[in-house]
Length: 161
Length: 268
Image (tube, rainbow over all chains, first blue to last red; front, side):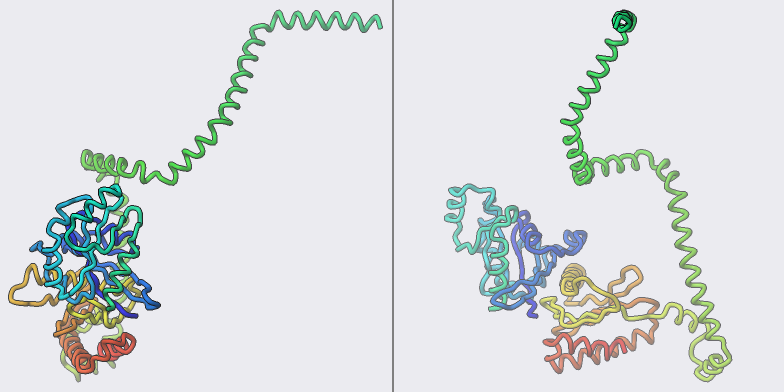
């Protein structure tokens, strides 16, 4: 089976961990996470009739945070940048964050996901997505399990490219 | 016929007398029976609701009261530590004593077994010829013999598992290798200078020895007392294994073959 390391990056509280919780059941002990700033989960996904084992590295905070070891970004085959659709500060500097992730991980593409769709009305969602300067790949709601599997499938497809 | 009429009159008089004498009791009886009927009617309506509430409480008790109970227990323990210690000491003391006695018994059995084996004429003669270790060293080595519990061969950057060996079952080896890589990266980033690598982690009765190579690292979990000989042998065998793997990269792409190599070079 193919195994790939994939990254989940984004500000605190944007719902990265909730997305993983919704998608993956097996998790590592909670005690380590706050100390070392990363949570590794694994999940097998089926993409184009192939089973791919995703080793999902949920990196706490953003890549600009100096506390995060740069080594966390090495060897990744795909990355997902998650922001909170209801909090402007999580997508204000999105381009800078994306550049930073690409530079640290050597990846050319990063899947962009806006989470917490359930907190916005359709009109508010439209305003937010129009205001963001980069194309958003998916809007999700971990709470309502909306588009979560699709987001990870997109990540898998990026990983095996 | 006449007699019957007399009887009827008697009966009526008796009834009248009964009514006069037992009026109070009759009222009480009526009130009581009404209360019972009311209660039965009420219980028919209320019982299903109570049952459903009890079921709900039974299923969701931790959710409804978990935090309150935890908080109460915490407060109780904080406020009355002496009482808690007094209450728990006899139970905990017995448990600890039992565990210690059991472990000491096992240890004593192992020491006795080893001594009886080591001090046989045959062994003493062999040791006399070999002439290296002291008797105490020999006994301790046997009792606390070092052994390899788990081996992980992991890609350095990605943390992806290439091959492994384990004495027991590991729930998710890939996740463990990922977290191990993350912990290693964190420790190296936080504490080391000039690209030093993390090489040893100790936890409980285990020691995790990490051997770093250019693209992979090999993590070996051992138990028991690691003698200098054991460490040297392990280092040699690990280096030999790494040399073979790094020369023939195909092993890194075939987990089954790599696992066989691990067993052949480190375990056998």
